[in-house]
Amino acid sequence: MEYEPVIGLEVHAQLLTEAKIFCGCSAKFGAAPNTHACPVCLGMPGVLPVLNRKVVEFMLKMALATNCRINRVCSFARKNYFYPDLPKGYQISQYASPPAEHGWIEVELNGGKKRIGITRIHMEEDAGKLLHDERNPVSHVDLNRTGVPLIEIVSEPDIRGAEEAAAYLRRLHETLVYLEICDGNMEEGSFRCDANVSLRPAGTEAFGTRAELKNMNSFRNVQRALEYEIKRQRYVLEGGGKVAQETRLWDDTAGVTHSMRGKEEAHDYRYFPDPDLVPVVIDDAWLDSVRKTLPELPLERRERFVRDYKIPAYDAGVLTASRELADYYEELVRLSGEPKLASNWVMGDVLRFLNEEKKGIGACPIAPASLADLIRLIQAGTISGKMAKEVSEEMYRTGKPPEKIISEKGLVQITDEGALTEMIAEIIAENPAQLAQYRAGKEKVFGFFVGQAMKATQGKANPQLINDLLKKMLAGDK
Ligand code: ADP
Ligand code: MG
Ligand code: ZN
Image 1 (cartoon, rainbow, N blue to C red):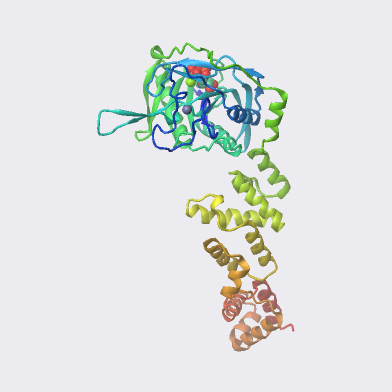
Image 2: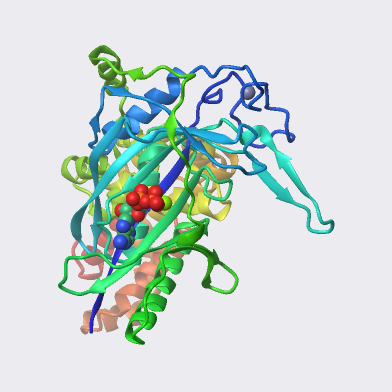
């Protein structure tokens, strides 16, 4: 029997607000343990949370970018459980009335497009972090993370394979980073994913029993964990067994998932409305003001690049991988007026230089204006394409403008037709044997003459001009 995987993803994204969600503590990652903590986020008795307005605005940006319906009133709920990284004994989250529902995003797969539904997006606070000491039988707790704002994005069970799941995650991630509401760092836990997966006989409607996978900290690991889990469940079902509803942990080293807890131990969180927080009312004016701040999203930008700049979809995909890169490219297009050449230079040299040093476009020493100058110099014939490669490397290394490098290195291309004609006449005169061969129809000899001419000019002659002159003069035309 053929089985079809059914997958739904829950993503937690840490928001890039300055302050935490319910107090004034810094939400920044990486400070010394327990230095970003106050009575509110430590959950002391008698303190009161105050909602950070920015958190709502960031959540709204993502909700709008993912085509969600915005509920104009939403409220917070307490999710009760005990764990040493949760000093209050409850997490403030949203349950019965989420602020955003019924959204979708589009993913591209093997050339086709598919819509994946988003069930809901809600706001919540993060818990602290336990650090387990490897050498001693103790654990430490860092409460800098308690109260750091998160949004949780829950997908519909619309995903039908591991690769599709990874494509969906990449699209969500890219959108969050474009919106500048999340840094997207998966290793630091700014973007975390739990994956729910079940199998059903192909062609049937009803869902099978699902397992929830945790502990994957890269797109690749999500894909690997799902691939493994799909195989495992198929094996169980083919053997006549039943898939247990459970939470399973991905073990990256072993490449397998292990059962962590079963349904019997499933949490009963006793959600109830948080009495310390009033419901959030999102009026038209607020929603409109947030809508106005939305940038063009990656997919729209990609499509516009293909349409307006007439570059291949592949190029557009690479060039819109980050907002800064797309901005860089567009500035270069504006300054050079050459979308295709601009794309070749950015995708070729610029990204290659940056990738070699694992740097982003923000750290690129070549300003778009300098690169536009370089393109202009090539087109004007001042330098050859080969020289331009040398110049671009030097531009990257030193940050100098191309004209300066060209004059320092004496790279100017020889385009003086008179001088080149004289030089070619000399070369022809010195090589009568080759000339006779060429005239007898041995066209390969042409390359010999090109080589001689380039050697005589130390590679500085305009290749097109050399070609044209040689053709004419070898044929005996004057
Ligand atoms: P919980 O909060 O207990 O994890 P939810 O109902 O919120 O449960 O579902 C979480 C995720 O699981 C959603 O993304 C949903 O699409 C997905 N999901 C639900 N049922 C199934 C199933 N049978 N197979 C795969 N995914 C599922
Ligand atoms: Mg879940
Ligand atoms: Zn605090």
